[in-house]
Image 1 (cartoon, rainbow over the protein chains, first blue to last red):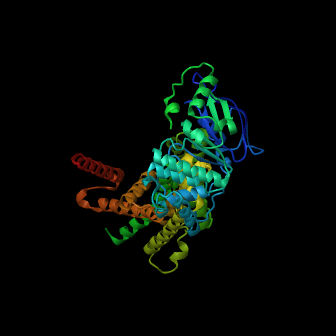
Image 2 (image 1 turned 90 degrees about the horizontal axis):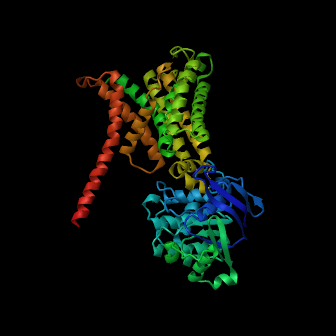
Image 3 (image 1 turned 120 degrees about the horizontal axis):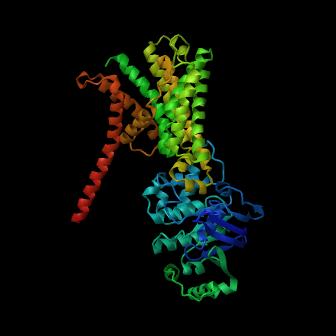
Length: 267
Length: 302
């Protein structure tokens, strides 16, 4: 479970460039819920995710995983509970290390790195078996340098890596945005499989309304650093992309037409 | 070149192989250009010499020298990580401070070890000619250290260190405490360089306050020579190419200085080094450009 209590994040506080990225987020996500997060650029989606991951410290407010207060825990310290996949396929892996070395790093997540060899044949078998799920033939390329793989392949491997260690929370930051539609569909497929299998609590930021409604069990929309609306259950299942857009316009209270092409066109 | 000077060249080549491994760890693995080594090389020599002269066992003195260098590396890491001082500048500050500290350790600018026991003393009694003993001793030490470091780079801890340099964000997302890895990496690197300084002082019979000048360039030269000859991904090959790079660099310099028709003298060493390092950097770059031009030409025809 993730619980955010009135989380505020302000960048460059006190300066002319001050930016209030989160203006008091209250959110409770029960165990094994899959939440999709939408909102226009600058709404605070990524800031919220980075705050939960620990990359950004909250200026005020509290963050809890289950009942543990993790507000002051470092990003590395939170990785026992949190796994993540980034938007940029290059960000989630080390390009100058091999596929198996990258996977070994992820396998060691949340454990103290010791002086035992990071790789052995048992691990290689495990990695091979995991890579087979992707159907990309990567199970035969354990020793290939990560930098030689395509963006889609790297992102798929990042996703597998995030699930190598048991964790409670999976944070996906537009992890299919940089992929071609076919690869994006494959990656989403595997995402659903892994989430189902491991009963993870998931937050997925996406720019695609379609994706936001098709995946997961709950959708929240952020606007100007706050959770604007929160859709779940029966109500959510009756929504389609058009309704979502109307709701957004209404919630803003200005009846203004939505001009964010990405929100409209995202398939 | 006489046999004696050839063996001497190899001996120094092996010792600077340790420097090359240290430089590889900071420049390549951690992506942290660290100039502390100019100071920590001298520091290793100074601590070893001062302790040996005051009657400490040479092996204990050598271990102390290694830890002294490691501490110097951690000071640089601290300046960078705690106070956000640019890595290059932080290491220059430490290096400058070490010059004074080394003079204090030695008490005077130069210490002679000719009459003292060294790490070599137990082996000199074996009856092998002295000039071979030194070479065999340093070769064995350096090869053992090389094996240990290439094993280390494949452990969980070593791999975490590599990830820290290659992609800090990914490293952190996988639970790696990157600051700790940078402290450890700089300590390890400068510890190796100080060990090289301690061995150099004992095989050459002196420690001098200015002996560390240019250590970084020599180390970097060895790394680059090794890299351009062996473009491998295997950690074992990479670490040993640092050592071989150091040997080849020393031989090249020695040949250049010994070839009378070239007219070089010992004082030309720095220019020769700069030209060698420059060439090692320029040639691969030109080759890449040529390749790219060829590829573009082929693409244009198609």
